[in-house]
Length: 139
Image 1 (spheres, helix red, strand yellow):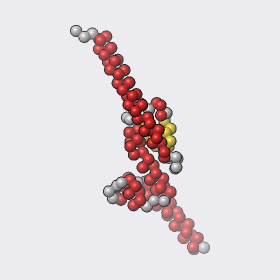
Image 2 (tube, helix red, strand yellow; image 1 turned 120 degrees about the vertical axis):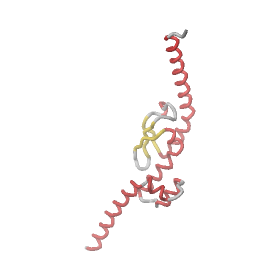
Image 3 (spheres, helix red, strand yellow; image 1 turned 120 degrees about the horizontal axis):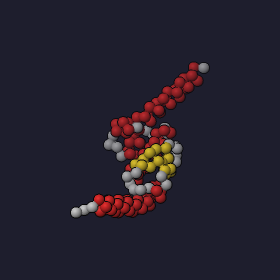
Image 4 (cartoon, helix red, strand yellow; image 1 turned 90 degrees about the horizontal axis):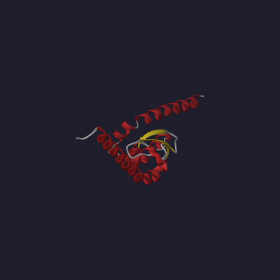
């Protein structure tokens, strides 16, 4: 017959072994996160405190300063491509076609759906600029 103490000990061993495996996995990913920084600055947690690919990270875009919560696995795989395109769109440098091609979208409809909030901000800015131009021409 199995005692309560044996069950507790087995559970403790299981937790201890799995914690060691998670830490090992994080150590494996650490070089990738360190080299992936490029466009992003890791704010939280510290690179040494990342437990594995299933945690959330707080990162800041080094170009526009935007702070985002990112899934560690997603940041590792495709984090840089979104940040740069956000910066381009905010600065008005990129057309929707350019952003769509850069992200690898099949068509611009997908890009418009994902980045509609940026396009709305850009439209408001364009309206202000148009009013300013028309006010200058009328004077």
